[in-house]
Amino acid sequence: MTFSIVARCPRTGMLGVATSSKALAAGGMVPYCRAGLGAIASQSFVNPYLGIEGITLLEQGLAAARVLERIIESDRGRDLRQVAIVDRDGHTAAYTGDKCIPWAGALEGRGHVCLGNILVSEDVTKAMAHAFETSDDEPLPERLLRALEAGQEAGGDRRGRQSAGIYVVHTEEYPYCDLRVDDHPDPIPELHRIFEVFQREEAPFLPMMPRKDDYTPDWEAAIRMREMLESSLEEEAAATRER
Image (tube, rainbow, N blue to C red; front, side, top):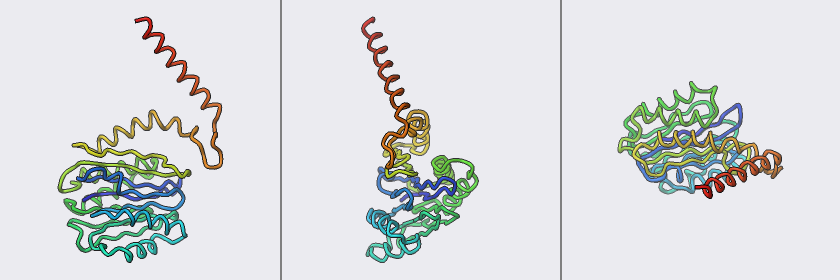
């Protein structure tokens, strides 16, 4: 019921998942990522525990292929499931159950997997892979968005459109980027719009965000930002009083 890409950037070590579907809030259920460990997409009659348990197994040091074997073995409903994994070293693994509604399948590449079910054709995953592979000079979030856009342009989910999301981790335990469009008539362009807002309004704050080994990595910048915000609020209040 969904098309997704799971990927790792070899330059930065970023890991992420981008997804779109004719289902509500796919971005909240499909991606499972952990910085420095791997990324997983679980979809098609989704079993969230495939992602949850998969991350646990990656943490134990298992490679993508072995993780996939273990989580599929444990799921009696495996014939309905679809899963893809990229581990910390860029190794990939993918599974599509025999009862997934066609077109259903996955295309594995170097450090990425494009997968989907109930698609118009396998051209969707081919277009996604091509868009991802030909944008390797760009940061991972942009490449994931390009892949989603290409998948939709190739036909996407044959039932229609409803939701999209992107989840990327980098060096910290919290996400670098976690954006969702849960219910929208054209979710991928809307996701792209929100990502541009993220780039403009959130990305400048990221160097000031706490790190696991340093809660105040750029304290002087944070203080300057705080002073700017307070000054702006005081100016707005003064302007309101003058009206």
